[in-house]
Length: 281
Length: 259
Image (cartoon, rainbow over all chains, first blue to last red; front, side):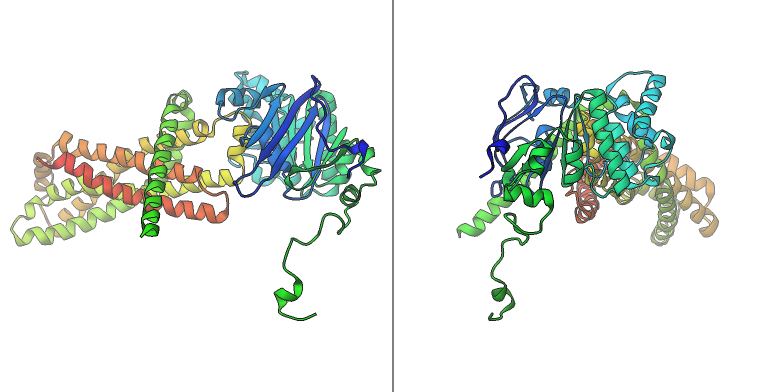
């Protein structure tokens, strides 16, 4: 059982919670549940990291918050308003208040770096061209890529693409920024730069940040709150980075220290080895 | 007995469901046409991408079809002493049938596959999902301008196909076979009705433009976001669009040219 300090329950919903996940169950098909009765809340102005192994529903949780999928049971609330995926008008109104960094950037490959960042501004506002230019250059400057504004997407590296996508995600100064695996595939320098950017942007803009990642070290450095998920969205533990790092729970220790075996098994459930290879041990 | 019946019933229901989904999807695209037309530069870019870049294959095919048609028709007509009708036969064949149909088949192969692959890869690269998360409707921003671009480009390409085909037939008939030039043009002028023949040909190519472009954008949007999914979707675009063009051509011909 998780310790009292790392209680796997939803925090009581209050006015300081921007996002509330209330007893949510979800599966892509009826036979396999990805999230089962998950309750969480994310506080305004804080960086919250959602950690967990592959397939535990981290990215799915972000997509439910973004209204990409409809929950099977329960509700997701954005600033107190239940997200209804059938209500397109409400969905788009809420989405204008959030930005999302996709795992591989999801940049528009037919547009330049500048045009990628300008895209939400051109589509969502009627700002004059001079203002759009200034905002785009400011956002690119924030991620250190003002000088790359005229490059084509094919000409930038993976790390640069992630930073361009981040500049695009914050182009409209969203209240909520969701990061899906922002450190995946980055070298150590780029990873450090990305982590600092997430923290700095959060502090400067006052936005709420949700970071979904496997990268324990970086998340522990930049987060105010950490949630550790297991399969079917079971909350193993949550608390401050220090609380999780010092946890004596075997499952938490295994994850934060990257131990190969423990409560979370390395092997996918299978028949006995001897049976598969037809030998007698 | 129950199982085959169940299987048949399931297939019929699946087909009806797919048809309904297509109809709803088409309705959604139609609803976003006014929004797309308010941003004409998006449509113009697609007319260029779909139309201009298909010019080479369409016009060279038109020329080749004109050459061959003139030769084949001449040898058939000369048997009955009707070689002077060559210009008329070639023209009617091109503007009524071959122009719209062959252009549509080429269009499905050249522009249709390109549209499906482009949209499918945008989906695989999460570009469409990114637009959704930015509160931008990908149907309105990506699909509808392509649909309008295809519908505008297709009749123009079909007219060019027929025009180049007639010129090709003229070259073969007059310079290779020795048909009288004045006769070639005058019998064509007398026998071809602008509205009934040319106009109906353009109406056909408009319908084929709707079919080919819609099939292409639908297949791209509904593709499985994997390399195999995109490959299957592009193949389906060619097969479905070609069969739909041939089937609708029969229906349109029956409606337009039977007394």
